[in-house]
Every structure is written in C-alpha cells, then in structure tokens.
Length: 261
Image 1 (cartoon, rainbow, N blue to C red):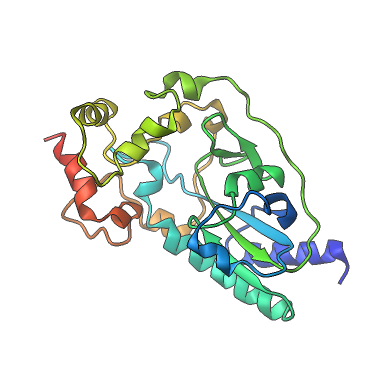
Image 2 (image 1 turned 135 degrees about the horizontal axis):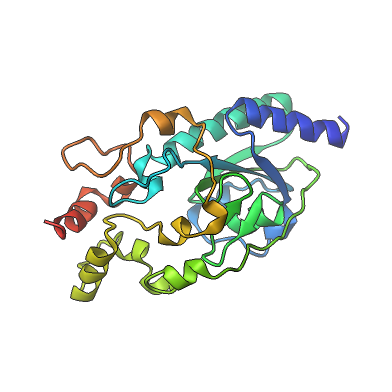
C-alpha cells in the first residue's frame, strides 16, 4: 500500500475507535530514551513506529471539588486501553504481518517527548503536553508497531509565559509537587499536611494547568464514558473501584480528606 494511503488508513481506524487526534513518531527517536519498566519487554522486536493518541478528559468548565480533573472521570487506564485495544485488534487484521502493542501510562515510551516530536502538541514548562485544541487536559496512550509509518514532525514550544511556575506552590519542583505529596502512601509530615490543606486538593493538583493561558478555551471531551461517569468530587461512601485514585488503595485519599474535617 502507498505510504500516504497507509497513513490515512491507520488514522481512519484510530478515529473509528474513538481516537481522531493522533500523530506518528519514529521509534528511532525514543530508542535511547526508553523508560526502564517491566513493560519494556512487550515492545515489538523490530519496532519502527509509534502511533500516539490523546484522550481529552475535561468534562465541565468548572473544576471538580478537591480532586484533579483527571480523577473526576472513570479510570483512564481502563477506558483508554479499551479504545487502544480495539484499534490494535483492527490494525492487526488489516496488517496481519505486523505487530501492534498497546501502552497506557505504564509505558517504556517517553510519551510527552514522543507526542511533541510528532507534532501532537507542545511541552509546557510543567512538563505536560499541551494539545493545540484540548490543552493539557489530555491523557496519552500509544500503539507501538513494527510497521513503518511516515512520521509527523513537531518540536514546538509553549508560550513560555511562566504562569505555571509562578503560581505553583512548589515552583514546579518535582520532589515537592503537591500531586506527588497527596498520593504518597507513607505518613505525611506536618508540613505536607499543611501543604494539602492550603491547596484544597486531596488528590492530584491542577494549579499549573488551570492558570495556563493555552488551556483557557479548551473544549470539553467527546468521550462518552468520561462524560457519563463524571463525579464533581470525592465521595467516600460511593464505589471508587473505577477511579484513578484507587490505584493507591482507598486509605490514601481518605487520609487526605480527613485533613479537612
């Protein structure tokens, strides 16, 4: 198949499975940047291309109460993987001689770098991908294949306005990031408890995203499962098995919520 037609064909398959916003990165770009993890052994032996996809998760204009926007929707690991798996299955049928491996979050691929390199968006000073349409309120997932696909090109930068760093309580320091603090299992120090109380967040943190001017007019998501399963906050007595914050077990977010009692 002609390379141009092949690319259109793959885009159509991704789109019909709920992923209309994709880009293509050559595997060679990430080959010396792979993240050590148990999933690395699942990469195709002769990987040549990465199909990067975004999953917008902003459901409402107003932010949810006390939790990050990403935690207000059903667990993206399940939702997004289901979409990627469906696309990979269809791609395997269309291209039976090739391998298509799905990764979401727990991935050896440096996702933001690959997405930026392939033109899916730009990297903010906070290290997040900022998509041209949906801003930084997006999840990333990918399909790695040994099929050679014409790569896209990007490498653009954000506005560098500095708002995210200026208004972040920790000035974008990864070691003291609020999102890392309120997700840790070990006991919180008095300073960390104070940090959580002051921020108002019991899970995650969206301060750097909420103040980003490139997120100002970001539209809401089209993903039905996110819309239907949206919650405007954390409720201890509701089932939380399908929430991203349950990966740490129920006690961590309950502990944080108790700081506001």
